[in-house]
Image 1 (cartoon, rainbow, N blue to C red):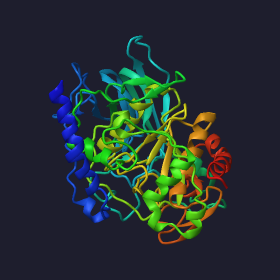
Image 2: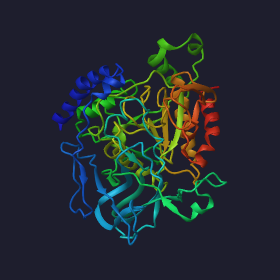
Image 3: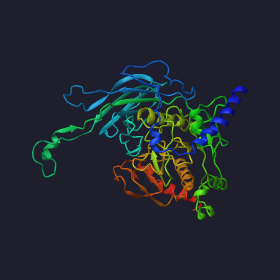
Image 4: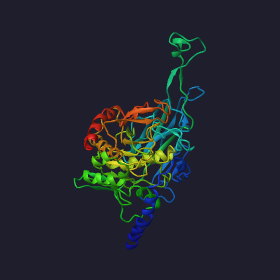
Length: 495
């Protein structure tokens, strides 16, 4: 016991301090491009057969945070159709190793999937099959900016949003191409479509993207839980007997100015302590007016990557930073809202693994995540107080941050706790960089489907994802709450 504690003290005092000092030097995107891709030894490819036995574990992975991915190629489901390009792909019902998160990927991220993706799954324990559930196919809006190193790495794949289904051991999937009018060789009709109204009698299915695969993610065991003084669930805690790896210490060291290296959470601070911290973190960059009246909300409690059980061996090693944080983009994860707050760490680990192992990103795309109970989680590694470059809003990742509320909020209303958490987080993080949550700002577009590359775009300091890209995200019900979040965040800042 004394030897283990001594080793922990040595790691925190020597490696941890060294890592924290190294992280003070921001990396350029070109430097990050030279990083070696993590070896994802836990990935499993099958040809549609049932895979039995214990979960495959990455060689050298921490026993407390296992995880694996079953990647199954989809097959044409043409039945008796006589078509050149099959309009439906999928897999028949089958038993598989345990998983909790599911998604579909394809070879080229620039190719959109014009169609419908549905899955049904078999629950562990009851053996009951779910009904058909839709996966969000409009996931391309969540991505790194064009021209940066992340999307040009050669590893990135197109994908649906992942769906949280809970612990399951069976799956069936079907991907159906959407159909539309098929033009003929005749002249254009009055409606501007070649062949006129007759084209409606010749529907043609869109061509589905190549390399369709079903991704079944096992996020590993949930992180340990502990209760706060009010008895509410507080996800994430450290096992005192665990010796952290160097990768864990590097990620944790990025927050060394806010919490001890290896901490499972960054505690909340009151207003006075937060203002003192602001002076310590960014005092040299503040104006006299900001020194006299620092508009910043009290720092909220944040569960660290160590707290939710991130396996730091999955991501790329280096971090990439931008200059500042001028805006926050609010998202929903579109993973469905059928999760409990005690499952949130597992859900985040599943999203993290899907982003890295299945989609080919360097790390989870969002800077922060928020669950329905109002818990705030550190997302992409690099330090919660720093301007970490994310992959959340295609075209507007530079000088911004992405906050994802766990769930789907097209028809479902977000909880008051989650909206309050977004307000508290933005009041603090935007306050570090002098941004007014009720104000406007300008961001330069990196390219997308709403704004051309290089255009200077005026946006709300707290925007929804759909403000920067044509998408339904963050869902109609969550988007309606952004006005309330802006007003609350400004009040938290003392404005």
